[in-house]
Each structure stands twice: as structure tokens, then as C-alpha cells.
Image 1 (cartoon, rainbow over the protein chains, first blue to last red):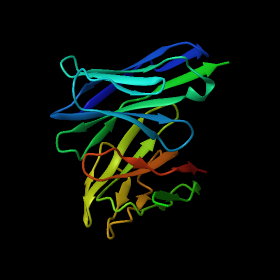
Image 2 (image 1 turned 90 degrees about the horizontal axis):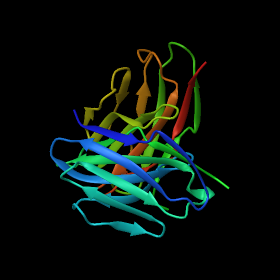
Image 3 (image 1 turned 120 degrees about the vertical axis):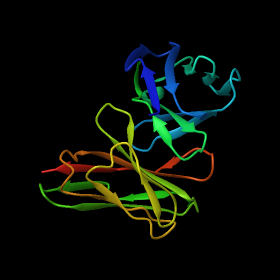
Image 4 (image 1 turned 30 degrees about the vertical axis):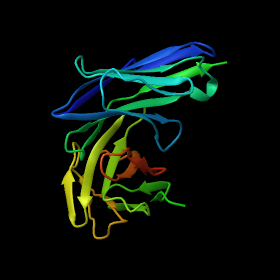
Length: 111
Length: 111
């Protein structure tokens, strides 16, 4: 059974701090790893990572995948209160039909 | 606008009742998914469908049923056999190996 584990479970920081969220996985025939942000209802897509060692970046957010060690990290620099959300990690198997999610990391950024 | 529409946003069910959650997409996506989210947790896969008239069980299918008679529609029925149905239900769709897009969710409460 495919498995995705995220840590920490929750995190409280102050504006301006940098945070690192972790995602490890055990997937039969790994294809790609995705990060989503869920503020209230619908998760919104952040990144898809397929190749090891290549950083994806969007503004203050960046993510990298290590296929050898089976994990990914999501970094957020200069955090803002608007970054408060649940961050979800998910993986595709090679067939691309199953998208398995981790338990999420709840991030709270205080002013 | 293209997107995924879930209805209703809130649903109350009495003990022993079956209820059906609607999910419609106009993105022309082949694959559709139903996830369940409990408070403070990640997403767990209930059912998914890769093409019309075909669907597969996910990790927590017991007490749920689906149909896929049309490409754009993937309704989920929560049956009386589901002993703890109170949760947030998310529908998603995707095409190929791209990211999945989510609806705004339905919050189901047993009264």
C-alpha cells in the first residue's frame, strides 16, 4: 500500500520566519510528487516534482525532491499571515491513476 | 468558467438515511476522484474513475457507492452502512499526469 507521511503535524511561527515542511513516501512505482495548499475548502496546486534534485520555485515558496531518500521538502521564506493553511503532499504512482495524500501540515503564521 | 462544482455545500443526514453528493466538471477530464477529510487530517481516497462506466475502490470505500454514467458527473452516495459519515468530502478531476483540480467540498453532518 502506498504511504505518504508529512511532518511536522502542525507548526506555529511568526511573520518573517522561514519554515520547512517535510514529506516522505513509500510508493510502488513512483511517478511524481505534488504539493497543495488548503486554506478553507479546495486544495490549490503549488508544485509537481518528478526529477530528483531540481528545485521548483514560485515567489517565496520552493520545493525539492530526493528520489533516492524518498522525500521532499517545501520551504517558505519570509512567511506572511496569508501563508496560514494546511499544506498537503501527494504522490502519483507510475500509472498516474492513484493520487495518495499525506496527513498534511497545519501552518499558522502569527503577526 | 471551467471548473468543478460540488453540491450541496452543507448536508445534514439523519441516522439510517442514504444521501448523494453531487460532483460535476466541465474541464473535459477523464479521471475523477472522491476524497474524505476528517478534522485536522489529510485526504483519504474513497473511489476513483478513469473513464465513463468504470470506477475503482480507494482505501475507504466501505459504506459508499458511486456511478459514472457521464464523463462530467461522478456522484457519491453515502449509505446507511457508513457508520461515521460526518466529514468534509472533496471531489477532484484530472487529465493524464497533470495535477488534480478540486471542488469546494461538501460538509456532511449526521444529526
